[in-house]
Length: 385
Image 1 (cartoon, rainbow, N blue to C red):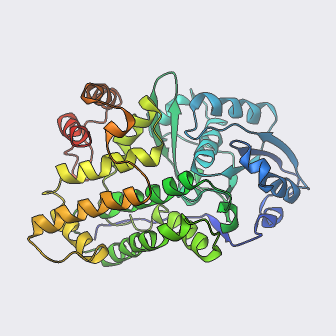
Image 2: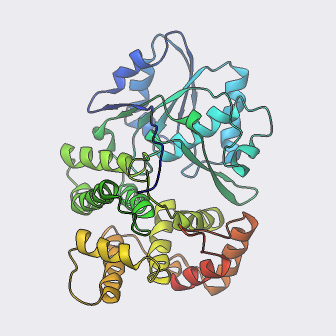
Image 3: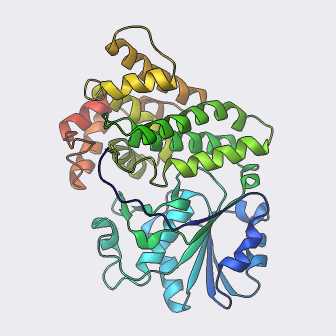
């Protein structure tokens, strides 16, 4: 196991009817900006619950945060924060709204061009505007981590940043808020959480027994929960477990002390920025192809994954590893998520465009070994056709 520091200050309020806890979590008389996406937060009554819990505060609403939050839209929120002396924010929604709020938190008090936050990975973030979250879509783990991904539409760039100053102060996790989600969003959330775990788990052995077993238990839980979550019934226990698995998948714990990959995410970000494919669906395209191209480099962990998660034990190590990749594809298909570029009408000619974007953004040495160069990324994309 590698050396590590682990820090996570986010206060989790888990369970039904926890939104009212906001009254005690937000400082009295704060000037609060509530950020949300489309009409679902209004139509489900969640937004009204949040506003009711903020009865002691001045509240400003900011809606319309996109499924992939854009720099342009979030800069509108930055101006509202600056002009109205906002001193606390609440994100109501899924990972996109939370990611956007993190950017606003950092950008509102940033002394330079806020785009620099993304081009430098958040290295120079100083003071931030504190915020909490009300999670309505389990998927990204953004409710309990310090990362954010923002898309600049004009530049066709989707970049990320991390900084401990943008951990949410609190996050409300009420599983009943998932009851009205469309099946497609639930499928995306399951796939997103699954790949988050894989990025931190499926690298190479480091004798990190706790992290490995923890990651495997989360993967097994998602596999078991998926058909229950996607059924028509709103079973509280299934939704509660799904919500908590998605949070645990990317709150930093299973990634502490182990190598991490994240090449699937980086390549996937380019697919979203260029072709507006849902984030989780880009991951389902890239991950199996990446595992196939890097099979021999990842074989030890692929075999472990095959045996412990999928109960595949017969055959040579190479055959077992290949079966694990096939099972991963089968799992994505069970979520009704395609796994090939051609499913999105992308062709071989589009690969050069994607690779050029990777080069433009300096993504030339990806993966846990830094050995996924542009040529290897091209092979991965070709495998994904």
